[in-house]
Length: 202
Image (cartoon, rainbow, N blue to C red):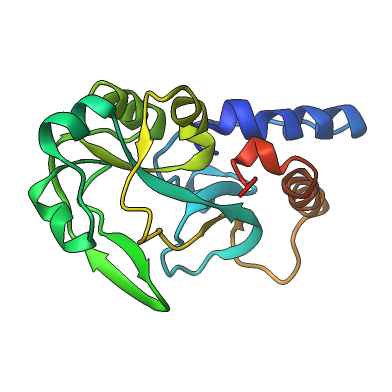
């Protein structure tokens, strides 16, 4: 599961599962890299964002909302983009070479941002944004405390990113193992009962 907020958001569900099923052995791995489930022997993975096409089976357990954010210092010195086209003149804080998508009414607009600071972890990107290094597109559950304190400011709010999702991914097969099915059901329940935890109070 993701290192960015797996230990804070997903780990409590795994702990509850261990309590409810004392005979079950649970081994978890926290990483923002994409693991090979079959080669590395995992029963399932939790992935967050927009899924790429693959032969794996995915079950969506909840929505993940995000927004563009920047620090007050960055906005003061570099300005704030008002449209997706203006983003290309700004420093973007990214995981790699990913494209960013935004909603313009019912249309999706895709932008290829550029930036000199990259990290494979959303928490690290949030810290870089707070430090004024650029603009980040991050999940609300990573940024809500920074936004609440004023350390980060939502920008370009007229063009929100489309909502992403949290998914339980498993290798292909006719039926999921019972342990995977139970975990999936518990995660769905967690999203429904604790929307504030995921930054879903909108």
